[in-house]
Length: 233
Ligand SMILES: Nc1ncnc2c1ncn2[C@@H]1O[C@H](COP(=O)(O)OP(=O)(O)OP(=O)(O)O)[C@@H](O)[C@H]1O
Image (cartoon, rainbow, N blue to C red; front, side, top):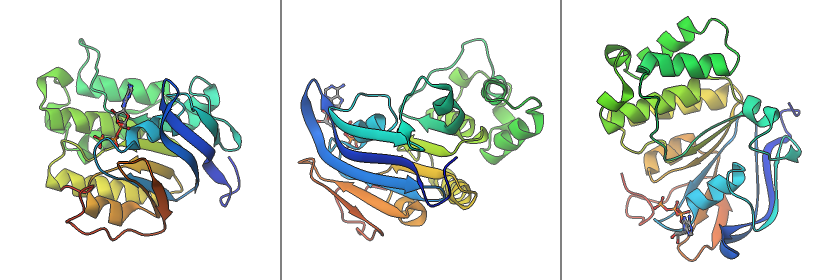
């Protein structure tokens, strides 16, 4: 790992888009341990596109992304060790229960005796009563909690989350806010896209605002107000 002040993630002159057409151009940003960059902006502005490019899941049209000073490579062991990400996915193994999924993730990331960690995650995300159910028998919000629990129970230096608040009710949004504040406090770097103003204000150390035109700006704090079109509770 780099010294605490060195970036965990850094992007330089990054252009993100599809088939040669840019959505966001010339983005330069960095996130160090214990910092949280939150991406905000209206639907279609380019938050997920930027997030996927930062996460190495989509090739950059131009520019570079580095993880701890190394080129971001999604299929490298270094990436798997350090980066935990959650996008808009909702896929599970049909024969496995909620608890099995969390155990699988924990063991896959090197936790030999994950029992306590898994039970803690089940409890934290209110999943104990459904631990033996198939995720496919849960509500969409409960399934989202399974995916968040899985993304957060494994050790990581960098968490990349696309609208982690989606489908969560008010109390679990508050819980998630606390969990991510705690992750920051423990030195995890966060890069998160969100439409939730309260979440953004509580978690962000810096805010990347992307407008519909793809124009972006980077600020240290957020106070966009509930009337902002990019923010809906
Ligand atoms: N696979 C794709 N191929 C081509 N264009 C795409 C693709 N995915 C998204 N886009 C386009 O890229 C632009 C940015 O989309 P993106 O999903 O990044 O926006 P967003 O800010 O994350 O929106 P939302 O708030 O709705 O999640 C949109 O114009 C969208 O139509």
